[in-house]
Length: 223
Image (tube, rainbow, N blue to C red):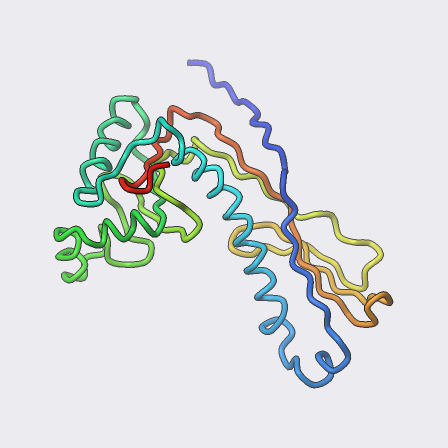
Protein backbone atom coordinates (compact mmCIF):
# COMPACT_ATOMS: atom_id res chain seq x y z
CA UNK A 1 0.00 0.00 0.00
CA UNK A 2 1.35 3.42 -0.95
CA UNK A 3 1.30 6.09 1.74
CA UNK A 4 0.29 9.50 0.48
CA UNK A 5 0.52 12.70 2.48
CA UNK A 6 -1.40 15.74 1.27
CA UNK A 7 -1.49 19.42 2.16
CA UNK A 8 -4.63 21.14 3.39
CA UNK A 9 -4.78 24.83 2.58
CA UNK A 10 -6.61 26.77 5.29
CA UNK A 11 -6.91 30.54 4.97
CA UNK A 12 -6.25 32.56 8.11
CA UNK A 13 -9.36 34.70 7.85
CA UNK A 14 -9.58 36.26 11.33
CA UNK A 15 -7.28 38.24 13.60
CA UNK A 16 -8.83 38.14 17.07
CA UNK A 17 -7.47 40.97 19.20
CA UNK A 18 -7.99 42.16 22.77
CA UNK A 19 -6.45 45.50 23.71
CA UNK A 20 -6.45 47.16 27.13
CA UNK A 21 -5.28 50.66 28.11
CA UNK A 22 -3.38 50.75 31.37
CA UNK A 23 -3.23 54.24 32.80
CA UNK A 24 -0.84 55.49 35.44
CA UNK A 25 -3.38 54.96 38.20
CA UNK A 26 -4.09 51.42 36.97
CA UNK A 27 -0.42 50.40 36.92
CA UNK A 28 0.47 52.21 40.15
CA UNK A 29 -2.52 51.51 42.39
CA UNK A 30 -5.13 49.15 40.99
CA UNK A 31 -3.22 46.33 39.30
CA UNK A 32 -1.47 44.14 41.83
CA UNK A 33 -1.09 41.07 39.61
CA UNK A 34 -0.78 41.92 35.90
CA UNK A 35 -0.94 38.27 34.83
CA UNK A 36 -4.11 37.46 36.73
CA UNK A 37 -5.93 40.78 36.33
CA UNK A 38 -5.03 41.73 32.76
CA UNK A 39 -3.17 39.11 30.73
CA UNK A 40 -5.17 35.99 31.63
CA UNK A 41 -8.58 37.54 30.78
CA UNK A 42 -7.15 38.78 27.49
CA UNK A 43 -5.72 35.35 26.61
CA UNK A 44 -9.05 33.77 27.48
CA UNK A 45 -10.92 36.23 25.27
CA UNK A 46 -8.74 35.57 22.23
CA UNK A 47 -8.75 31.78 22.70
CA UNK A 48 -12.55 31.81 22.89
CA UNK A 49 -12.69 33.74 19.61
CA UNK A 50 -10.53 31.08 17.96
CA UNK A 51 -12.97 28.41 19.14
CA UNK A 52 -15.85 30.49 17.76
CA UNK A 53 -14.20 30.48 14.34
CA UNK A 54 -14.60 26.70 14.01
CA UNK A 55 -17.96 26.75 15.78
CA UNK A 56 -19.25 29.21 13.18
CA UNK A 57 -18.31 26.80 10.40
CA UNK A 58 -20.10 23.95 12.20
CA UNK A 59 -23.16 26.15 12.74
CA UNK A 60 -23.34 26.84 9.00
CA UNK A 61 -23.50 23.10 8.37
CA UNK A 62 -26.13 22.57 11.09
CA UNK A 63 -28.31 25.28 9.53
CA UNK A 64 -28.15 23.68 6.08
CA UNK A 65 -31.00 21.76 4.47
CA UNK A 66 -28.92 18.56 4.62
CA UNK A 67 -28.59 18.50 8.41
CA UNK A 68 -30.28 15.75 10.41
CA UNK A 69 -33.16 16.79 12.66
CA UNK A 70 -32.94 15.77 16.32
CA UNK A 71 -36.25 15.25 18.06
CA UNK A 72 -35.85 16.74 21.57
CA UNK A 73 -38.23 14.07 22.85
CA UNK A 74 -35.87 11.30 21.65
CA UNK A 75 -32.42 12.82 20.96
CA UNK A 76 -30.53 9.53 21.28
CA UNK A 77 -32.20 8.08 18.19
CA UNK A 78 -30.51 10.46 15.76
CA UNK A 79 -27.14 10.14 17.49
CA UNK A 80 -27.30 6.34 17.44
CA UNK A 81 -28.18 6.45 13.74
CA UNK A 82 -25.17 8.71 13.09
CA UNK A 83 -22.90 6.23 14.85
CA UNK A 84 -24.23 3.44 12.64
CA UNK A 85 -23.77 5.64 9.57
CA UNK A 86 -20.11 6.21 10.49
CA UNK A 87 -19.68 2.42 10.52
CA UNK A 88 -21.33 2.19 7.10
CA UNK A 89 -18.96 4.87 5.77
CA UNK A 90 -16.03 2.87 7.15
CA UNK A 91 -14.86 5.78 9.29
CA UNK A 92 -12.32 4.53 11.81
CA UNK A 93 -13.76 4.20 15.33
CA UNK A 94 -11.12 6.28 17.11
CA UNK A 95 -11.17 10.08 17.27
CA UNK A 96 -14.92 10.45 16.74
CA UNK A 97 -16.53 13.46 18.38
CA UNK A 98 -19.99 14.86 18.95
CA UNK A 99 -19.91 18.61 19.53
CA UNK A 100 -23.21 19.87 20.93
CA UNK A 101 -24.61 23.31 21.65
CA UNK A 102 -26.73 24.28 24.66
CA UNK A 103 -30.01 23.34 22.93
CA UNK A 104 -28.99 19.75 22.16
CA UNK A 105 -27.20 19.49 25.50
CA UNK A 106 -30.43 20.40 27.26
CA UNK A 107 -32.31 17.74 25.32
CA UNK A 108 -29.73 15.11 26.30
CA UNK A 109 -29.95 16.09 29.96
CA UNK A 110 -33.67 15.36 29.84
CA UNK A 111 -33.10 11.73 28.80
CA UNK A 112 -34.01 9.52 31.76
CA UNK A 113 -31.38 6.85 31.02
CA UNK A 114 -28.61 9.43 31.06
CA UNK A 115 -29.91 10.99 34.26
CA UNK A 116 -29.63 7.57 35.92
CA UNK A 117 -26.03 7.27 34.71
CA UNK A 118 -25.28 10.71 36.08
CA UNK A 119 -26.77 9.83 39.46
CA UNK A 120 -24.66 6.67 39.64
CA UNK A 121 -21.45 8.64 39.38
CA UNK A 122 -20.38 6.90 36.15
CA UNK A 123 -18.75 9.47 33.89
CA UNK A 124 -18.72 7.24 30.80
CA UNK A 125 -21.78 8.94 29.30
CA UNK A 126 -23.21 12.19 30.62
CA UNK A 127 -22.06 13.10 34.08
CA UNK A 128 -19.48 15.87 33.77
CA UNK A 129 -18.77 18.93 31.65
CA UNK A 130 -16.77 16.91 29.12
CA UNK A 131 -19.67 14.43 29.16
CA UNK A 132 -17.67 11.32 28.25
CA UNK A 133 -18.67 9.02 25.39
CA UNK A 134 -22.00 8.31 23.73
CA UNK A 135 -22.41 5.68 20.99
CA UNK A 136 -18.68 5.80 20.28
CA UNK A 137 -18.55 9.60 20.13
CA UNK A 138 -16.57 11.67 22.61
CA UNK A 139 -19.15 14.30 23.48
CA UNK A 140 -18.11 17.90 24.09
CA UNK A 141 -20.25 20.95 24.83
CA UNK A 142 -19.69 24.43 23.43
CA UNK A 143 -21.74 27.54 24.18
CA UNK A 144 -20.86 28.78 20.68
CA UNK A 145 -22.72 26.00 18.83
CA UNK A 146 -26.30 25.78 17.65
CA UNK A 147 -27.39 22.23 17.03
CA UNK A 148 -24.64 19.62 16.99
CA UNK A 149 -22.08 17.97 14.74
CA UNK A 150 -20.83 14.38 14.76
CA UNK A 151 -17.42 14.21 13.15
CA UNK A 152 -14.08 12.46 12.89
CA UNK A 153 -11.08 14.64 13.75
CA UNK A 154 -10.05 14.61 10.07
CA UNK A 155 -13.32 16.26 8.96
CA UNK A 156 -12.28 19.79 9.92
CA UNK A 157 -9.10 21.82 10.09
CA UNK A 158 -8.56 24.74 12.45
CA UNK A 159 -5.42 26.70 11.58
CA UNK A 160 -3.89 29.05 14.11
CA UNK A 161 -0.60 30.85 14.51
CA UNK A 162 0.75 33.71 16.54
CA UNK A 163 1.85 36.83 14.64
CA UNK A 164 5.57 37.56 14.71
CA UNK A 165 6.82 39.42 17.76
CA UNK A 166 6.40 43.17 17.43
CA UNK A 167 9.96 44.44 17.11
CA UNK A 168 9.08 48.01 18.06
CA UNK A 169 7.23 47.13 21.25
CA UNK A 170 8.59 47.19 24.75
CA UNK A 171 7.74 43.51 25.25
CA UNK A 172 6.28 41.13 22.66
CA UNK A 173 6.32 37.33 22.58
CA UNK A 174 4.32 34.27 21.58
CA UNK A 175 2.45 32.23 24.17
CA UNK A 176 0.38 29.05 24.17
CA UNK A 177 -2.98 29.25 25.91
CA UNK A 178 -5.62 26.49 25.83
CA UNK A 179 -3.60 24.91 23.05
CA UNK A 180 -3.63 28.03 20.83
CA UNK A 181 -0.70 30.17 19.69
CA UNK A 182 -1.18 33.78 20.75
CA UNK A 183 1.00 36.90 20.74
CA UNK A 184 1.14 39.12 23.83
CA UNK A 185 2.49 42.66 23.55
CA UNK A 186 2.86 45.44 26.09
CA UNK A 187 4.11 48.92 25.20
CA UNK A 188 3.64 52.60 25.93
CA UNK A 189 1.38 54.54 23.58
CA UNK A 190 1.94 58.29 23.35
CA UNK A 191 -1.43 58.65 21.60
CA UNK A 192 -3.38 57.60 24.68
CA UNK A 193 -0.62 58.46 27.18
CA UNK A 194 -0.73 55.08 28.82
CA UNK A 195 0.64 51.57 28.62
CA UNK A 196 -1.30 49.22 26.38
CA UNK A 197 -1.58 45.44 26.57
CA UNK A 198 -2.48 43.80 23.26
CA UNK A 199 -3.16 40.09 22.81
CA UNK A 200 -3.82 38.80 19.31
CA UNK A 201 -3.65 35.80 17.02
CA UNK A 202 -4.45 34.57 13.50
CA UNK A 203 -6.94 31.80 12.78
CA UNK A 204 -9.12 30.17 10.15
CA UNK A 205 -11.05 26.93 9.67
CA UNK A 206 -12.10 24.72 6.79
CA UNK A 207 -13.92 21.47 5.97
CA UNK A 208 -11.47 18.78 4.89
CA UNK A 209 -13.87 15.89 4.27
CA UNK A 210 -17.67 16.42 4.40
CA UNK A 211 -18.14 12.63 4.36
CA UNK A 212 -16.63 12.46 7.84
CA UNK A 213 -19.22 14.61 9.55
CA UNK A 214 -22.97 14.66 10.16
CA UNK A 215 -24.53 17.98 11.21
CA UNK A 216 -27.69 18.16 13.33
CA UNK A 217 -30.33 20.74 14.10
CA UNK A 218 -32.84 20.49 16.92
CA UNK A 219 -36.47 20.09 15.91
CA UNK A 220 -38.21 23.41 16.45
CA UNK A 221 -35.02 25.36 15.66
CA UNK A 222 -35.26 24.76 11.93
CA UNK A 223 -35.10 27.82 9.67
